[in-house]
Length: 130
Image 1 (spheres, rainbow, N blue to C red):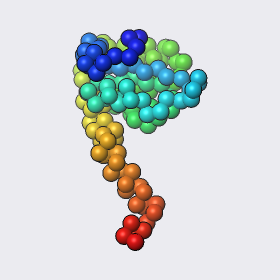
Image 2: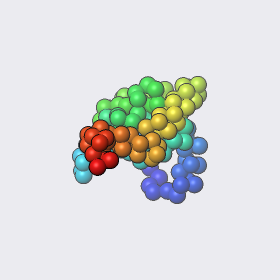
Image 3: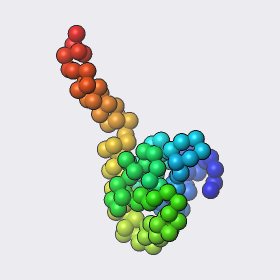
């Protein structure tokens, strides 16, 4: 619980721990959106442990990029954290997958292309030419 940090300090903290834990709740202002902290950790090849909250489970594939646990599941959160913390091979594999996932799904260029494709499919490709 370090509060807001500079990008450099964030990188240092991720290096020290090797993974990110983001236990969010669907209350007090609504659900977690897409979870920028999780996306940044994934882009830095760090596995993440997130709550089943807002858009987080849409980005983190449980058991592939990190773990998704139910909100307020303290035992599940602790178990996921221990798995990653005590197994360097698993941590490395999840981190690599997280990086690949971030580039595939969370990268702004890739996201923009997907949104454009969806918009063209909805509007009809001929509507753009008109």
